[in-house]
Length: 348
Image 1 (cartoon, one colour):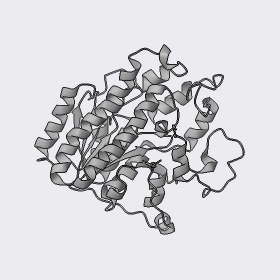
Image 2: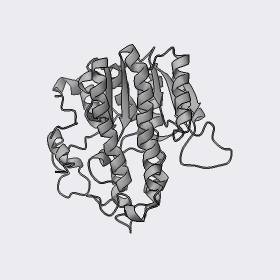
Image 3: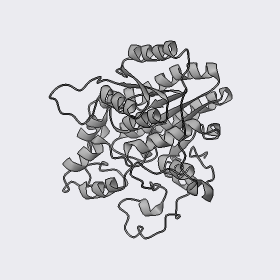
């Protein structure tokens, strides 16, 4: 079985080299779903690196007097500009094909056909997933599939088609799907895992067709991330329900106590952005095309720290396996090989 995981070797010097600021001045980027969470973090890092950043979301400005978990496009744009970047917020409902088409037509017109980076991050299913944790797929509403995978999968493909048309014409570009370990093993529910594995396969197959045009396509797995939704889940999760978060059939049972411990060492939403800035400037990006990339592994390769100065640990480190007693004392270099990690998703 061919592994889709990146297996490029990492030298000790890659871990120790001095962190460099990498400018993306002159680059045009599009981040979908950038009002909050990982999308927000990616967008502000790209802007800070000097790129022109288009951001999308359904909420342009926050409704007066209404509290919500997320933010709005105006807030993200303001933060990007405060860091010296240029931001173009575009209100877009990614469940509507005509709005997505207009988005890319606008980018094409305003940037004279230039689009250097697309980050497929838009996702509209977090609330629905959390409300149905522990409910088997046949007892969930039939609409669950579309709720999870219309924006989170179908729209990613649609955006990739429009982006590829621009990138192939210029013989350069990078498309990134934001995915997760749920594409490898059961997490949350069936619709979620199916969608995430499809995002990974999209990067592999589309990347194969794009390779001869010098356009790269990768799937990015952040680790646990301190997003607004995850912090809110940590606060509201009852410790008496040990199966509540990951789902009753998940390999690891996640209760409130374990979730709190996981979030103590979780990535900030901006760490994915730091990784993507370096991917966008990597002269050898085509060697990574078609692969699943993990943020912690990229952090090690590029010598990155999170915004608070921490080194993010890889999910391949045995001492990072949640809920398994007796592994915490193992050194960080004890890791599962990528091929062994891929076997966890073996269906033969």
